[in-house]
Image 1 (spheres, helix red, strand yellow):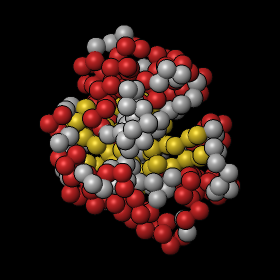
Image 2: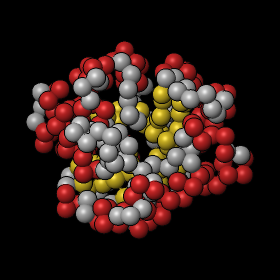
Image 3: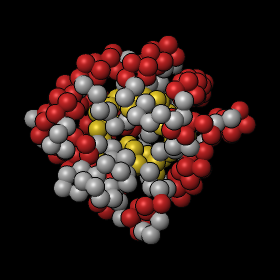
Length: 256
């Protein structure tokens, strides 16, 4: 079964057909979904989805672009959610320098705090890093992983940066961007990264693969991503699906 390691099914883009879509995933070969918290509200939404659907798991965390909402009071609440039985990681957390706001020091502060939260909770992390490779790596190396590791979501850097994350024993979330014609750097990185360190993801409803680029994304498009990875690595499609499922179950501690 396909393991979807990063989706946002609580997004308003799914308001009209969320239940119908989710209820049809398993018959289309999607066996597991990790829905990702990106702020306080979406973490709450994620927990509700995970409690409703047995095959959906969740993460608790605040995306760097939303870190200005974090205060000590709601950070305490966030920490408490890490003990929920369906929460399998802290994320998505990290740094995003594409935008000027929030201030980079605010992003760094709460990235460090959430890394420490994950370490205390003995959970892996889901890392968001955009135009911020050096600072992301520096903070992660200083924090350490506590032995629980994590995944670099929507990996978009060159293979030289991939080596740094590999040295830290991290996984790499590969999504629809790998199918884009102009994704030469990412394709080279995917060729370099061992298949045992790759997870399949969509970031739904965003980043739909070719030929659906620009449209609403869903886990139903993962076969297109897996086929592209198989082609890049000279592997069978079925092996890509099987190995990445094992990878995700291992990272997120899902023993079914």
